[in-house]
Image 1: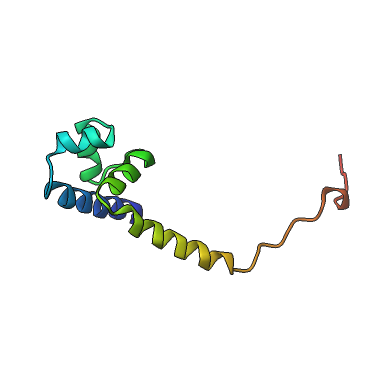
Image 2: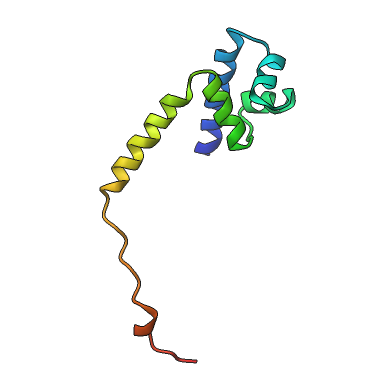
Length: 95
């Protein structure tokens, strides 16, 4: 599954970047989570979004992911809109 692969990739990036400057305990304290949670993140297991985003921000990596999200959002802003449903007043009442 692609989401599992992405979590594994993100975890690896966090681990390699974090390990250059500090150990897990120090980084977990800065992120505001436990060492077990940080270990799960680094091993590609799901953690809550706030923990993930805080870790990425503290490592100086969040801006790269925001740029990708902004790019995708801009692309979707120009996509055709879904057709709207008929107003309920135009639908027959069969009940």
